[in-house]
Image 1 (cartoon, rainbow, N blue to C red):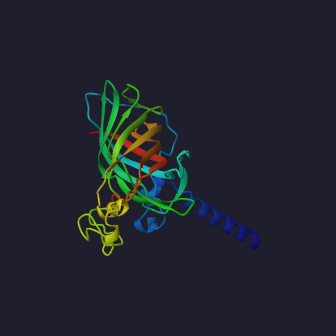
Image 2 (image 1 turned 90 degrees about the vertical axis):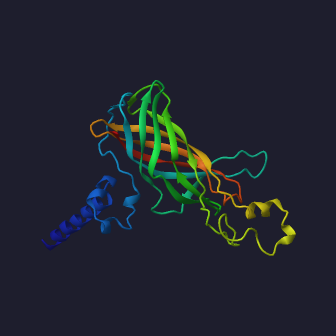
Image 3 (image 1 turned 90 degrees about the horizontal axis):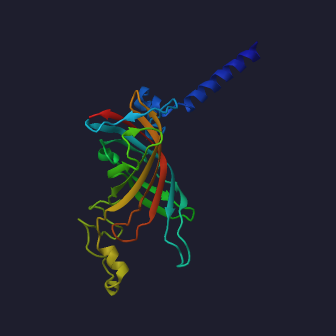
Length: 272
């Protein structure tokens, strides 16, 4: 009897452990701050728990919004410059060094319909995250994961959102550094020194000039979003995305490289 009681207690503890570990991101709303802190659950996008393939019709004479848009990266790849002229640049998978602050969340914008199809214009939200990726050789590549001012449209002339709908569009990529950032030699765009002190002999070198003259560079990225689930009752939609954008240039001190981010997204359509 004692052995049986121990087995029952162990099974109860084991099942409780599995339940806690298998908690879906949609259960976050029922948890307290102390229960979420340090677990990484806040970095996960909501999910549509049941697999659905409904449809949402966007009427041209009405106003709509896409709200609570959340993009959660699941993989990163970097395409560095090739070592030789005959070599072809290709993406190399990297490991994120940024832990629990990699997700873009609570983004919203207008959703319209016309003769060409559907168009989404991003307007507000937590639409950027400072991220760093570690390459196999040890190089660390920082970049600003973002979809600022995204304008994405469907490729098919339809006013219906379903599991075959794809959005594609371009967005702005601001500088990873701000104007008040100072490099190790105290140089900055709006503060600090204008040039590196005690290096007058190299003042005319192109490399040093690029380091001295700081710039707030704004790049451009491109994203493709494939919808796989639609709940027409709640207006929820979910799917996968692939985004390609430039990396940080250290305020003009080095050339940007392409970053490929893949992951999952969630959003909700509602009348404006």
